[in-house]
Length: 205
Image (cartoon, rainbow, N blue to C red; front, top):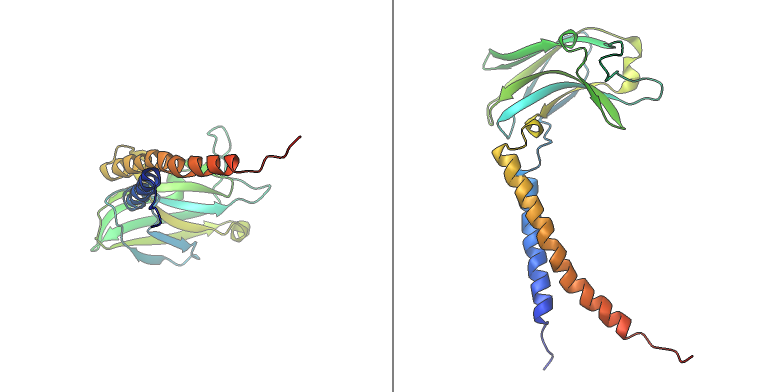
């Protein structure tokens, strides 16, 4: 009768399965970078776009531009503000205004990565499951703005509240998954590696 898997193997596989469950829970509860709306920058005609959020909390309205060598939006208050787009925005629900703002009201709220740069145009609070409308009106824009692939995005702002209950739950589950996966992998990999090393043929000198 062929012997079954060793207790060490069973324990390792069990820990990896548990780690996978923690990872799935992390992506369900802790993935805060949620973008319920992304639209290309409209022309000078007002555009109304409907959206909903899955997680109640604070949200941002951002103007995002791809990074182009030689051109950038200043992220230092000492730099001269650069406003390539003059626009206004309004968030409404059931014809009631939730929040409004413009790019001129936030000339220094810049951020960026290696791939894109952006300007936070304002923030608002949204509730899950409620329909909203974002109205964008572009008053003017630089002629070269098209080269930056401009778009207006609504982003979850829950990352600014690290102890938000849902985010914190996902954070804990993610670390539990990592701490469970490491010993599980060790129980499977280390014995296999040791068997491979000890079974290698030794050549006489």
